[in-house]
Length: 222
View 1 (tube, helix red, strand yellow):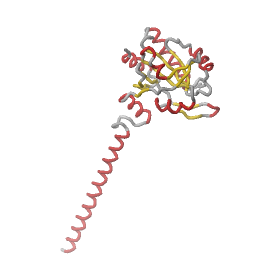
View 2 (cartoon, helix red, strand yellow):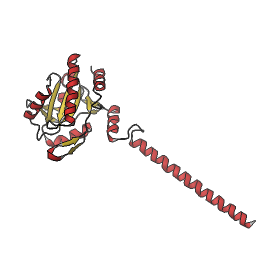
View 3 (cartoon, helix red, strand yellow):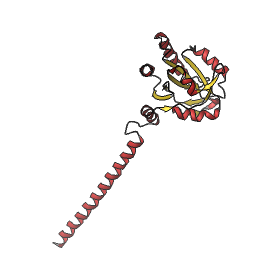
View 4 (cartoon, rainbow, N blue to C red):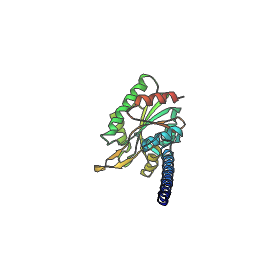
């Protein structure tokens, strides 16, 4: 009888330990899920790129006031340029020596330019290519790139930073990741960035969704 009582007591003790362990594990799991949801915008973002896009869509951010120059050597600030004509701008980031993703972006912008011309939307929409390689992308280099891309100056412009020291601020503002590659080249992510006439970045769209970007920009244009 005593032996049975002892076994019963041990069973109760083991059950209590298991219950406490289960409860503790449940609490840890719940806390982990809360942290995960907070870190991924309530479960809507599971990559840095997606999280950045979600943040921009929820809270548009003001474009930094950085000094830039164009293919003619004319200087202005990025925010002033993007406020010109109260247009909605579609912005990409390139360097003119790039023969990979930048070439694809150039083709996408050529297609967007054609649509803007065809639909006579140049008073509502604009295209801007921003070089993050001021050491090489001088006004002359920008001019060669402009001619190669057959830019319509009423629609599509290209600029570069006046100061290489501003590059970090520029890239961070738009969520661009640039990694040096061999032969002085770069690896970088690419997207279409929509900026309102008030100079706020409000959407980021995949570069292969140019039609979507155009529709969003047009719906937002004054």
